[in-house]
Length: 356
Image 1: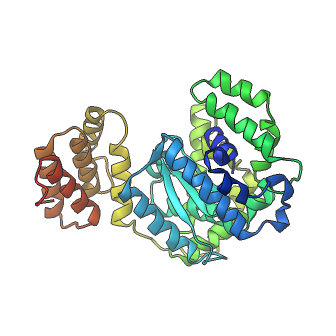
Image 2: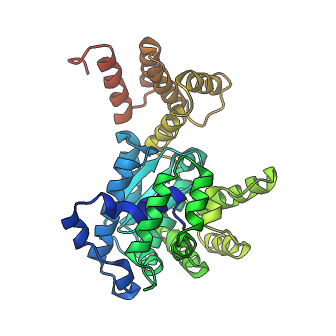
């Protein structure tokens, strides 16, 4: 899929922050044909892009619980992919848009909006399986590096312009118009054949990893219906993964051949979704949102919604109320490292380092 404009800027500008010696070790992209791009080179480029995201991207979510869960889930899926030894790293972007994207070298970004909107763990796994397949099939390497016409100099020029214009949409538009952004964006777009191949491979990953294979089609179909219902622009994911009727039909045909079996969501999935929701808005707004869901009993898991409320209360510095919610969760016979992590954070916030 496309990288967002912000990440295109990072992709094109990452070499600027490197010391000259390191930058000289990177290949000139215009000199590398897609078929000749080594995996080592692709991973080196991906590592440098990830470095830039960590240090320059404000929406990068540095949360140990969420990142640990995504990597646990993602590597479970990658282990049954066509290239289980590739080596993946999953990270989170704090953005309400429903999106996920793959980068060179096996780095896969997941928006918080996708985590919240996925109603089952199998739906989230379906999207990740699709992105993993783009990587294992070398779609990124074949698309981004297939042209010998894109030189590093022009890419750096665009990256500088976009980085300087991040706070202004008009300036960013001007930057795109005055550089080779259009041509480069076209290089980052996956073809329909690549999308269909990622669908097929992603389906097999879901099946082999024990998730509900219907998760992929159900998620995409719900997104498509939501767009039609509200008559607005497509979600970020559908803009970058155009969903044709043919693709959706292919997904449904494949799943019809697999016997149905119910797959329960993991406790960690439920807790992570609740935590991500509790991160949204101001602390007071988050408390009000989660408390309303709890009072109206609009939840799939009471322990998860109470955990989300506890985290919102922690953000709101209401330590005692947060502790009470965690105690209630324990009485519901739910145990998870994320709960103990929050309890430790609460103790530290109150000056009880030994207790933490």
